[in-house]
Every structure is written in structure tokens, then in C-alpha cells.
Length: 410
Image 1: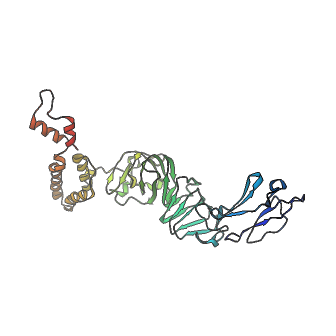
Image 2: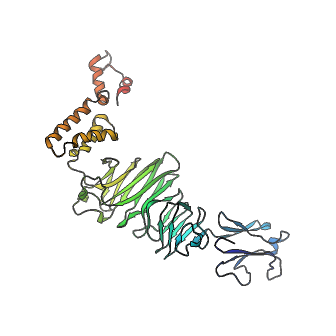
Image 3: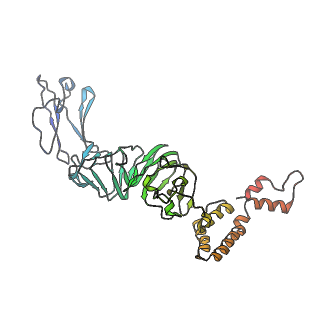
């Protein structure tokens, strides 16, 4: 018998209506029992041909897949009573057998949550496929991973946990009514497209990805939609009232962010929106915004963090952090390190609202970058210094070779 009370009846000596010794295997319902004549409609039956000189058929239970295998030796046939799907019959925890009609779902057993049932993930778990009917509820107090498909008939709220999807997982039924609130992690074993059906309590805002390169296999990408403006955006009244947090390992992807009309504040000029990326400071990495489709698109992304849409700040350079960030790009040809960015930004912001102090500090910061050893020993300044010091070679316009220059240049 199975853990849920269902069982298999083996009728080793059953004779078919012709009197032939055949044998039969009948699945029994643990709740209401099983009664009546054995027939081919309710049982796996043998025949005198299948079982001649082989004895009666004998089912074998496979606990890993929650199924019975019924071999017919002489015909090389195995019939399967499969119980790979288990359905919630009462509200309860995922790991409680009493919640299900065919035992606790596992990585090889699929789960169905019908209308009116609530299943709680009370500890980290991995199951096969998951199907949630309209009116069914999945509560996640722990992480849940799927090895099979996900069928949505409503919303899933992951809370502070993560719904993990395997490389082979596909999602069915996603829509403006059926989506995931919270973090979704997808493994990728190959390049290709995948739609993350994420959203927030006020609406559906999926992220469409096209993974173009993997540095490790499998790689993963985690996506979460967040309601409200990105907390560090320069002017929230001119920014999308939504952002997406993406984390990844080993992936390059094209991204499409889908937003709602209601995400655009009345104080914003949607036509001027650009894509913004925040990973300690804001940058505008390019891409495009289609206001007709409510989409922001960008290609070739291989670093991931927070993403949103907003109007570019017309006085962005007046922002102390942006001012310092631009100096790193212009003078040192690199992104700032966190400590350096914080130090030089503080040099300016320490003035408070004193405009004269700010002006002097900005000049001092610029001078510091110009006089920095990193700048003085890199790029065109090195090229000019060599030329000035050593003059021209008779047969060359400058006194150094390309290889000599490159060894010192940034």
C-alpha cells in the first residue's frame, strides 16, 4: 500500500472469461475501497499467451516515482500504474502527506493545487511540475525549486523567498492575472529566450530575456519586480514608479522591461524616458524605450543590478556623485572603485548647501584627478612626455614604439 492508503491488488490466479490462467493487477482506492469484477477496464490483465510458461503477472512498486510496474515477461511489455501527480485535498504544509491524495510531491512527482486549497512551503523543497488552479494558493515560507513545468492559474507570492526553475522548466498560463510576485530564479543550460512572469501587487510587469552567452553551464538569472521608484533615483517624480532587481552569474542577455501605464507619474515626460542602471550609482547604459508598447529594451547586458526608466537629469553634472563618476571615466578610463567614489563625493557634499564651497571643492577634485599618479602615468600624457624628453627618431615621427607606449598606457 502507498503512504496515502491507496494500494495495488495482485490477483495472481485470476482466470479470464475463457478460463485461461492470466493474472491481473488492480489499483485500489484507499478511501472508498475497491469492489466488483476484474476486467480489462479496471485492471492490467495478462493472457494465456502473455503468461504461458511464465507464471502470473506480479506488480513491483517503484517508491522513487510513486508507481507500480507490471511486467509481462514473454511479450516484453511493462504496464505502469503511474501516480506521478499528487493533488492537494486539504490545506496544509507541502511536506505533510495528509495534504495530498498521492503522497508528498518530490523532484519526480508533480503537484496540483486545486481551487480552494492552500499549500504552504514550510521548508526548502524540490518538486517536479507545479500546477495552480484559479483560486488555489501557494504560500512560500521557504524556497521552492521545480524540475518540471509551472502552470499558473493565479498569482504566486514568494514573499522573501525564491521560486527556482530548472533549465528545462517552461511556464504556462502567465498573464495579467496570473504571475509571480517576488523573486524568480531560472537556470540556463543553453542560450535562448525566457519570459520571467513577474509583477507586483498592482500589476504584471514581466521581463523578457534572450540569453546570448553562458560562461558557465548551468548559469542562472534571478528577477524581481519592485513597486515604487528606485530609492536612489535623482527625481522620483520624473521616473517610473517601478524597478527590477536582477542578479546573475555567467550570463550575457538582451533584456526587455515591460511596465504599466499607471507606472508613469503625471509629472513625468514618458517620451523622454531612458534606461537607468543602478549598482551603487546610476548610469545610462543605452538601449531604447518604446512608449507605445510600454517597454525598455537593452542588449548585451553582462552585469546585473537594479534597472528602471526615468527622464535624464538635465543637470546631472551638478550631482556630486555623478560629477566624480564622470571624472573616473574621463581621466582614468574606468569605473570608480567604491571607496574612491565615496571619498571624492564626500569632498563635495561636505559643503552642504554652501555654493561657494561647492565650487572650490569641485575645482579641487578635478585638480586631484589631473595630478593623480594613475592619470599622469597613463594614456596620451605618457605619449607626449616621451616625445618631449627624447625627441624624434630620424625615421619615425615619435621617439617610442607602439609596444613601448602600450606598456605604459591605460
